[in-house]
Length: 137
Image (cartoon, rainbow, N blue to C red; front, side, top):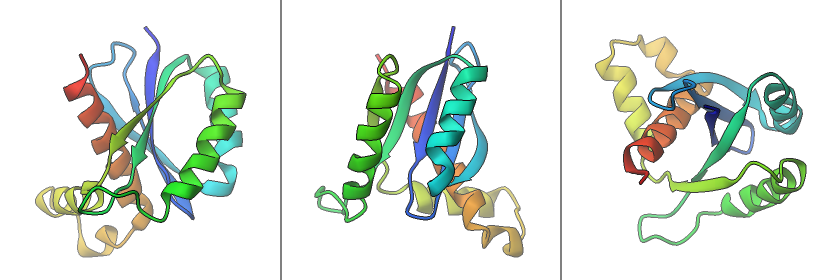
């Protein structure tokens, strides 16, 4: 089986998570500078078979799209052109950063490492992917 790749898209950097080949376990993979993301995805998909992109969908508390959704839409258009064979699924990511931070605290990660926004983005991508895996039919 091919892997599923999740992206927590941000203005500066993007957290990346990936499944194992059996699509059972979601693991944080890396954080990529947003300007380098398309190149990184091209390189990664040349080495690994990816079946699906799962991209976080940021919303406000009442469900309306957040300001960053416009940036994400532009990104989605690019990847749909570059990777027409890989579908994209969106997942509500409203509380992933908070959950990621709480996970870091409960895991005993030091205060200094909890300030590492790249690590928070990577954990957020993992939460997005795990949410997809848990709720898929």
